[in-house]
Length: 67
Image (cartoon, rainbow, N blue to C red; front, side, top):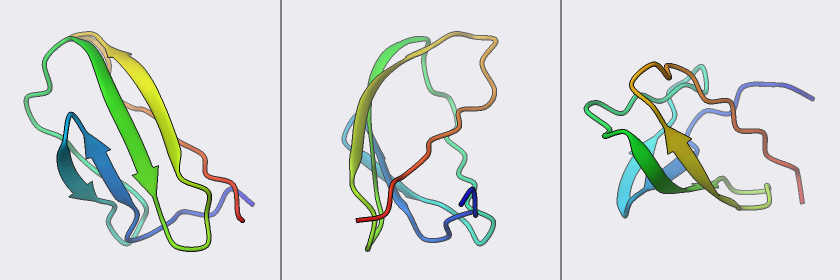
């Protein structure tokens, strides 16, 4: 439904972050290269992926599917 999801758990390289009220999250000082990313939220299927980050990347959109 393309709605924003507040309170999602984002795990990248073993560190946890949480999405804000608008479904956004911010990670400072993420080094360029490949990283393992996992996103979880109650009532949604967990998503795992490997992402390639470069110095020019600013946004990553992750879509979750309801269970």
